[in-house]
Image (cartoon, rainbow, N blue to C red; front, side, top):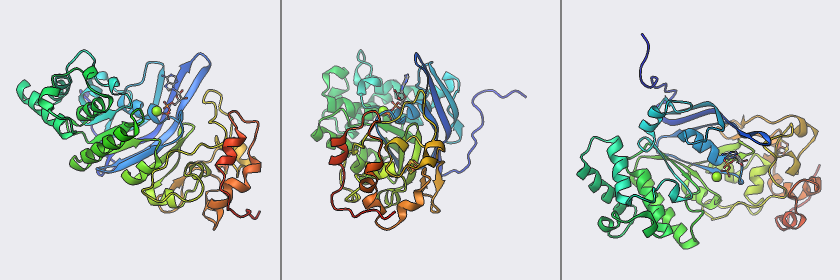
Length: 377
Ligand SMILES: Nc1ncnc2c1ncn2[C@@H]1O[C@H](COP(=O)(O)OP(=O)(O)O)[C@@H](O)[C@H]1O
Ligand code: SF4
Ligand SMILES: [Mg+2]
């Protein structure tokens, strides 16, 4: 018999609410094929927060948009992303619409990505509730107001009748969070949810997100530039570089003993970032590689103090360090040697290719620790 409707769920583990496997995204561009995502795999467990960090252009947003089915037609998507066992990639629009906004939702940097300027805020949230739940219009409207109240919008009854442009930036972001949470999703992807806001508003919005996370049973993917936010909110962290995860582990594993020089660079090398301390991404000398014509080998090699000839020909796979902590570096074990994390970016400084695009001696020097000892090798 021919099957109708979406395929049967295939769970590999009921604790895994989202399973992403070998996700690849290419874009057709005028310059050729751009390999934006080159094999991303991760699992998101029920109720956990997975932080995703990495420089601009590393593929964080494209990974998320692929999972949400929101990429333009110029994108080719391969691999698998299963939400509660249900495949999301390359599915019919109807099947995706049934889960988007219901079981999985996304919070963007720019609220106007998901708010329609010509509809009242409350109506938009009520529409989303009506589309996915068996409720009356009146019940949907009441639920929309209650959702706005939960994200800290004052006088929600009245504000529900406003248009998005009548809200401040912070209030719009709250409205988008309300929209994302309205149907009690199992997974929320928040892509730089506070980056566009000023600092005081950022803190308030983060607080709201934390409250929503604690109140709901949702698992969160939290994409951010702020390593302190990841340390304080996430259970695990995934570091992206050049379209791939280069390190994945618990906050303790990755922050206390990074096994990939890029992560070490992000963490600022020294002093070690105490869990909970706020810290934005540290600029690392040089810039990320071209994703149109990538060089062979480890994509971090031109910027890496430890790079060897092997690194320039052989791209390191993501390897398990034995405790579920994964890292993509040929010399991951060397980073565990005593003193190594404190000296690598100094001792290796002379190793860095100063001709590489974007290399800035002042930036590089500024980010060198000053009290490290020589690396004996
Ligand atoms: N619609 C698109 N068409 C072509 N290239 C794109 C498109 N969207 C993103 N890219 C490219 O894909 C790569 C990854 O982008 P993105 O996922 O947005 O990075 P980030 O980690 O900053 O979120 C970048 O090189 C970016 O220029
Ligand atoms: S594989 Fe080589 S170039 Fe890549 S991060 Fe490790 S040491 Fe550096
Ligand atoms: Mg992005």
